[in-house]
Image 1 (cartoon, rainbow, N blue to C red):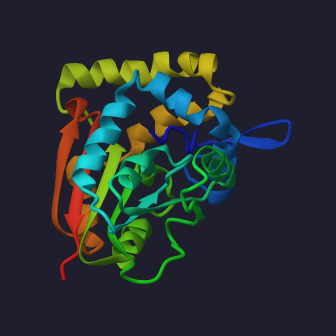
Image 2: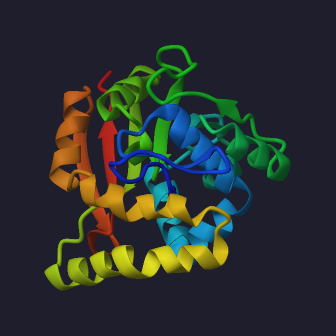
Amino acid sequence: MRGPGGGGPSGPCCHNGTVTRASLTKQPHEVASMFDDVAERYDLTNDVLSLGQDRLWRKEVAKAVDARPAQRILDLAAGTATSSLPFARTGAYVVPCDFSLGMLRVGKKNHPWLPLTAGDATRLPFKDGTFDAVTISFGLRNVQDTDAALRELYRVTKPGGRVVICEFSHPTWTPLRTVYTEYLMRALPPLARTVCSNPDAYVYLAESIREWPDQPALAERLIGAGWSKVAWRNLTGGIVALHRGVKQG
C-alpha cells in the first residue's frame, strides 16, 4: 500500500525545517522527502492502516502480472521492495524502482539481492522495450504528471507486454463509499499516529483518494497513453481497482 505522497492544497507542512507532508501539487522533492521520513516503519504502517487488506491486494497484483521465469518485470514505486518479492519468487528478473532514496535504503537492507534502482516515473532510466511487464501499486497517485508516467511505462514495455496498476479508487456501493470516506477522514489520521513516525504524511491518503479519478476515468487515461485491451477489476468493493492493459506488437 503506497500511503503518503501529497497533502493539503495550502502547501507542505514542516517540522524542524524538513518537509513532512507534500502538497497536492505533488512536487517531486516534497513527495520524496516525505517518503524518506516514513521509510523505516512503512510496511508495518501500511499493514495496520489497510486493516491487513494490503496483503490481499499484493496477491491479486501478482496474479494479474503473471510473472514467469526469465521474464523482466519493472515494479515501479516499489518502496522497500516488499511488493517485488512475489515476482522474484517466480524466477522472473524484477527491478524495484522508486524515487525515494530513503525507501530504497530500507529495501536494500531488507532485500540485498534485489537490483533496487532510483528513478522518476516520468523519466525512467531504462531503454525502450526493456520489460515484459510493468506494474505500479499505490504509487501512480503520487506522480505529478500521471499521463507522462503512463507513457513512460508504455515506452519501456516490450511489444506484447502488459501493464498492471493497483490503485485506490471509488467504492461502487453507496453505503460502503460512505463508511470508507468516514474512515479516511476521521479514523485514519489518529490511527496513523499510533504506528507512524510521520502521521501528518498519512493525511494525504484521504485527500489524494478524494482527488483521484474513478475507474472509467483512469481507464481512459491508459488508452490515451497508448495501451490496448484496457480493463479493470474492483477489489474490496472498489476501494481498490486493478487496471490492466497490453502494448500491441
